[in-house]
Image (cartoon, rainbow, N blue to C red; front, side, top):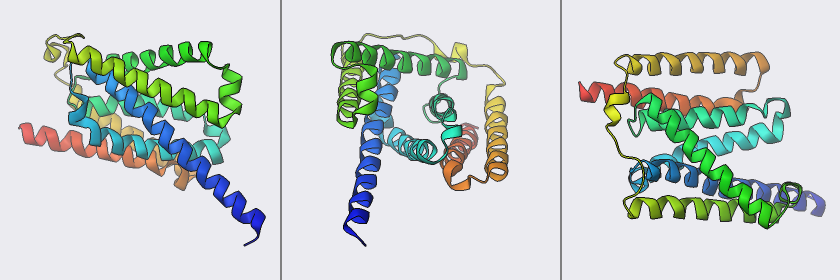
Length: 219
């Protein structure tokens, strides 16, 4: 291997590790804020969150790096995964899962926008990796800290979550996840991008498993 080849390989590895690390910090902070604001202890779901976030971040990296035409899918999938995570793992009613997801992402976007307005421009954060990482790190730390402080002070939203649960929502969730898996499988086959979208399939399969298993346990 030539010196240029080694340097190129090292650069790709560092880029991948940086993307995964700081995207993980972002993802965990969004989940933490979503849970803390609604009076759930994020630490109880830390490892579940970490596993799902790593799967999706890896998938986002592949999608961004190799399928530019499908890069628009990543934000949609991230929102969908967050909703399904709260519904199947945390066992939150589907309506509240949507609300929690919106609150988490909205809070994250607000804090990150404020930091960008003070520290760097959007163009600088997008073109300079170091500045982008700084913004990701600071946003993640601040968002997580805000959520934790709210939880520790007893602040946040508390009400009867079960009143928001539809009688038929469990069946709807299982059917919806099954449909998403089928549609994603067709997309992978038609576009011949199996390796690039398999992570999304794994995440959906995990949610389907948890949804079916937990319902069986409750019965």
